[in-house]
Image 1 (cartoon, helix red, strand yellow):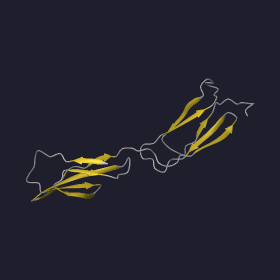
Image 2 (cartoon, one colour):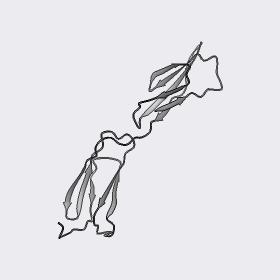
Image 3 (cartoon, rainbow, N blue to C red):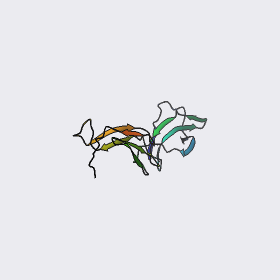
Image 4 (cartoon, rainbow, N blue to C red):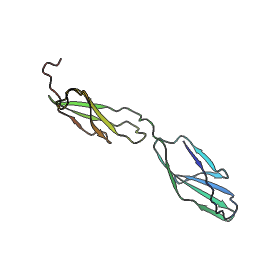
Length: 147
């Protein structure tokens, strides 16, 4: 949802007979109303607005102003695929959700034993802005008697 309010210019060259609101190149409002609410916009979408002011002698446009809607939680499934490379490393790969609804980043965390820090079980090993990136988790401790 966007709330738009017209700020009046101190320099008015005549009596304003109507205002027009242009949203992404399409005139969506016309009249003397100076406040508009637009609903049902897509999360994290960019919109361009422009106001047209008219007098009995003609019309003039203000500058283009852009606004982005807020983010929303991602929608869809993120599938994680993990393959064992060898006794001490695994390979992780993931998919993106069907609708990101904002700026996305992915954290890959792994819980297990590491040679580097055997006392620490969970470790953030990778941060990415993209899906379908392969991430190798290595330096794991091989357990001979694992069940």
